[in-house]
Length: 175
Ligand SMILES: [Zn+2]
Image (cartoon, rainbow, N blue to C red):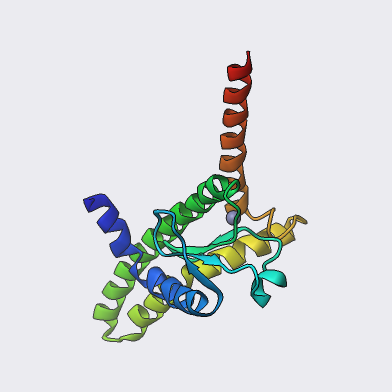
């Protein structure tokens, strides 16, 4: 509980931005997920967003919450995949928290508010910036900006391993 609380504390700026965006998505495009997760919004299939921009995707982590567009059968896999992104989000938030502490020191010594204000803004938008950077790096390596992103490679690797283990269990059951 304390450890979870600590992770929430260091993720606070990123969560504020993520939940703010999710609130509007929930309001216009979805409904609360019934899964026992954080603030996850299930997109309504009839909305223009799902029919156009989001039709190839099944879930996106915004912070500790996100959006889902899955069938009952896909649910477990997609939640596994998104939980990797939540972990990545927490790593980035903790990293930015350390940066914020340094910026506070710089602010005190330089008698200026700018360092900590800049650092707070950077911390709040870090998840977006890291995802964007990961896509750019993938492009520069001549890979697909989505599937080549190292953040996605990690999330898909966990899902593949989970599927392999499940299939292994099934075949063991048959024998
Ligand atoms: Zn992903």
